[in-house]
Image 1 (tube, one colour):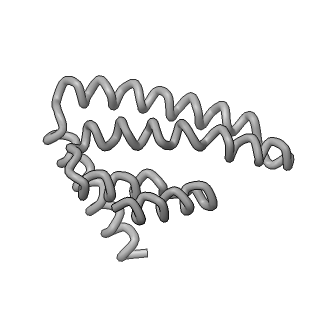
Image 2 (cartoon, one colour):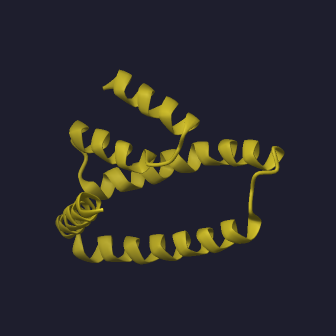
Length: 111
């Protein structure tokens, strides 16, 4: 698992897109429930995202308006999701994640 997390870290530092799904997969395989998995995933992403953002800022590749809008939506969704998780628990979240995966898989299949 150490090697898997190392490879996920390299991918996260290099590409970053989709890192959350890889972390969720690895952390659930280790034995964390979805609530703890998501909390740890968010912490890990929070640690390395500022470094990636700094590189993009230095190279003039940041659209600040879109970034603020995205960050606002992300913060609102995180606040709402954390309240739902505390109220409903990890079994509810597991169903939501499974439904989302199936919906997106069906969408991709028919495109």
